[in-house]
Length: 370
Ligand code: KG4
Ligand code: ZN
Image (cartoon, rainbow, N blue to C red; front, side, top):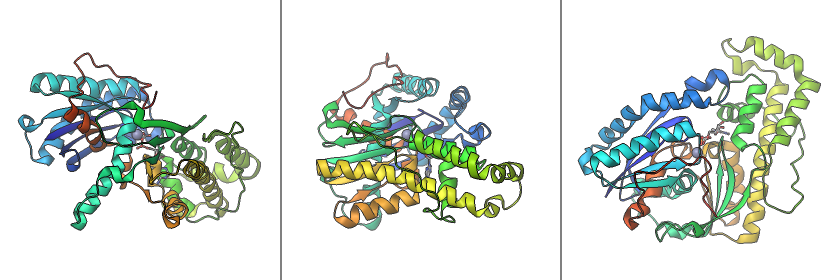
């Protein structure tokens, strides 16, 4: 069985072809980073306009790269939500027109479910590359799944991935009360005039700083829930800059187009970045560890753009894997938004015959849990 996945929920236009739901034949992504860079964040109107331009070439490239023709595709999976409405509509509408003209079933996928599937998809890829027999995906479950990106920071309890589509499989254990983790990275980088997207830049520059230089307290959630909060850290960075580093930051702004810009920042800025990053990652680790103590999962799965963060990976490996509870991450290309994860999540629905009809609409607030 060949399934085509289409993803357009935010600023990446992506299409992928998978064989039997776990073998990635192609995974094509058209990034819009260059478009949104000058605004320091995704501009929804521009994102949808670029999806319209990219969707046809991206889908064609995914078929070509997979070495298959449209006649060989058995079904089409598309991200229905959550995401930006104008962006989602482009993917949903194109997937519906392909379903109609190719006479192939359409399945609707929740973007967050896609992020969860990206982890077992990665593990299978690695095992195949090593020449070993991939372990059954259900060996990982029940699992705690942390989805951390520019738009989401949610911790799910996932009972299993088998048995068709069943919303009871997902339980929301914790979520951000304000900003998403990636959003905090992007906003701190913007405040310091370091460029966009902020996450990878902060990750790289933090290695030059002392993460103990500035002490930012972890936001407290007093009602006992395992929720996250990032706006307090972001505001604390702003206050710290205003009180201690305003002149340095004004100079950074004036010099941001110079050669070797990133190599010549004041040490106090590297220290601030490292301290911010440590606090943000501590927040993610703290809540996930507390949830793991309460729930006793078989694994911890981390996905989304922020799952690329090197400190996060190191701290989760130390905090979980080395203590006997394995933590897994997708490779960077499967961590950030992609369509391979959408095709993987859509495959069980294709097999189970859980099809969407041609009235399918985008759902900006689509939930994974009841
Ligand atoms: O999953 P993604 O590609 O798109 C969505 O937001 O859905 O995630 C993008 C986010 C951005 O906020 C970006 O700054 C962050 O992921 N990010 C990182 C890293 N790489 C990407 N954050 C921290 N460290 C990184 N290495
Ligand atoms: Zn995402």
